[in-house]
Length: 191
Image (cartoon, rainbow, N blue to C red; front, side, top):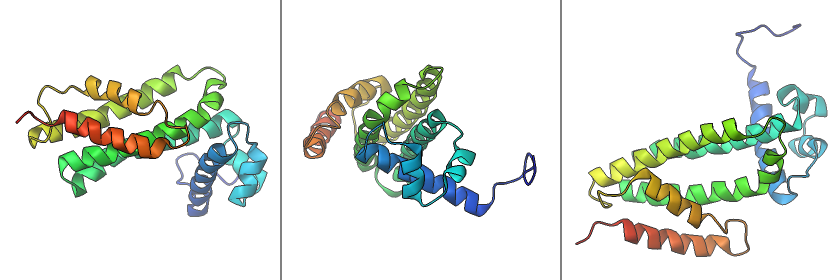
C-alpha cells in the first residue's frame, strides 16, 4: 500500500482522529440514536468522510469500535480505581461506571444487533473483560474485609444486570445511584 507499511506505527494525527471519531460517534449515538449517519459523525468530528472510512470502512466497524472502546475503558477502570481508592469505594465507583456503560450499550444495541455476522464473539470478549474486572474488584474488597466473603463474581454480575435495567429511562441516574448504595450495603459483612 502506498504510504503505509505493515508493522509501522500509526501517525499521531491518525491516532487522534481515530480517538476523536470514536468519542464523537458515542456522543452522536447517544444524542441521535443508532440511525445516525457516518456523514454526520464525520461532520461532528470535523474530519472528511474519507478520513472516517480509512479508520472505519463500514458502519459495523464504527459501531464495534465504539462498543470495544467503552468495554475497554470499563475494564481498565477497575485497576485504576483500585490504585487510588480503598477497595469498597473502588467497587462503588466502578458500579457507577458500569451503569453508564450500560446506558451507552442500550443506545447502540440496535446498531450492534444489525451487524453483519452477529455479535456473539464481540459479546463473549466483552463479557470476559467485564467478568475479570468484577472478579478483581470483589477479590480486593473481600481481602480488605469490606464485603462478605461468600460473594461470587456471578452474584455481582446478576445484580449489575438488574441495576442497569432502566439505564436509558428518564431519571435513571438518581434511582440507580440510590440502588448502588443499597447493593453496597447488602454486600457488607455481617456485624
